[in-house]
Image (cartoon, rainbow, N blue to C red; front, side):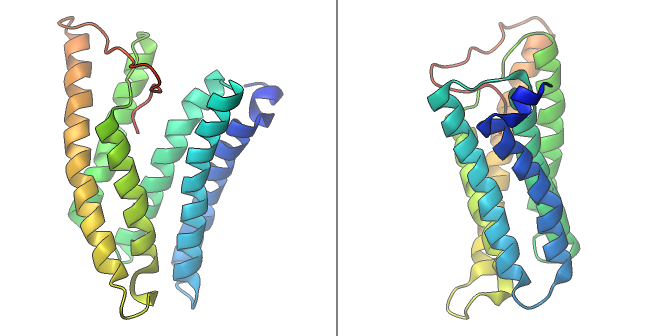
Length: 201
């Protein structure tokens, strides 16, 4: 990794996302007045950097090997760390959280293998929906019972997490199926559709 790679805007935003992870986890642990809302705001900020770094990278053609590696790692670290912490505080349901975290580990390993054999893992539309639902559900869980009584934030977050877990299983199956087929030599590496990026969200 060169200094230029680290300094370009998309990579700087990705690094910021990684640095925000321990801050968000720390705020959750505080469990002080206002901490729920602060954690949710920081999570939304971190998730927003994912959208922004991709937009800037495409608009300015700022692509690098470091960015391609770190971007999906940052996404998975953000989701896994926050979800596990919420489960530890009994603020998120265990089963869908477990499904999401295990899927992230499995797909990350598969993605590394596919990269080593120069085979891409195109991001599917369904996987993008999974990410969107997941990133929407988590802030509701972070706010939880601190929300006004008329807004069932925790219920919305839990339902969202269950939906995300269902999409997680489906997209995880698709990635695993394609990876196994390639490992067994029964299929060509999955082609990357025009306009799609490589890396499983």
